[in-house]
Image (cartoon, rainbow, N blue to C red; front, side, top):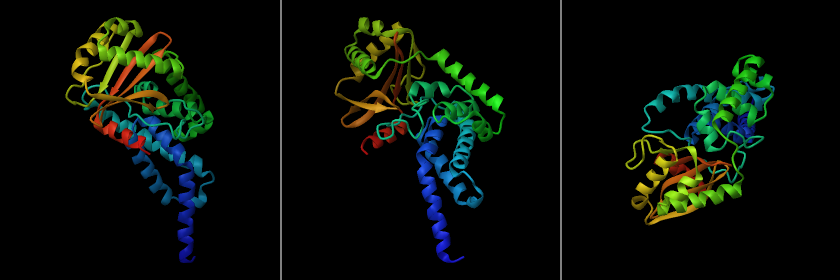
Length: 298
């Protein structure tokens, strides 16, 4: 075997990996709700692929998806411990989906922030099974092989995850209505219009602020239309002056990026059903905002 063979083999390995990379990233990101953690998983998957006897791998795509899913599950299990030391609510890290609306998947399922937030409440194996089935449309038997379990158990995992999500999340409105209600919400929040706010918030609305201890970020979820509207009206006069609002897309839905003198301070996303605003999610933690804002420039 001459010197050239090794290089060619590595070139081929790189080509295969880069072809499936968007899908691998989509799996890892959905299971972990974090772009930084998803990048770490891909780095690790690439190292394993380099050191694998690739000639023995019949289906590189399936092999790499399996490695990625298992690595993501392991990391999710240890992330649970880290999240317990997080200050205040933990929200998934937003991602700009304009370049890849489905984020490497067959369909754009399990991508919006409200669903990722609910997935976080499932155990990592249930989460992975749900993601592989709903977003990537893998056959149950293949998911079972990937997760080293039975097909029957895999069906149960997916069905449990589906039930959990549908019991906690109502059907969202379309993009135009979503954007309209978001504008109404933002105007009312800026002016402290309690009547309008109470009218568009559902009776079990929750407002979550992810700041990891950042000054001015609420450390507990605010629950119910009266509390949420009063909370918004109270911090409004201190918060909104001199802020610029830019409409962006995060996880396939309209979002508002709020900046102060050119520096992003919060990304607001709303989960909206026919009933009105179900969840308000304010991402303030710079570790989540900075990568998101950087991705907008590309």
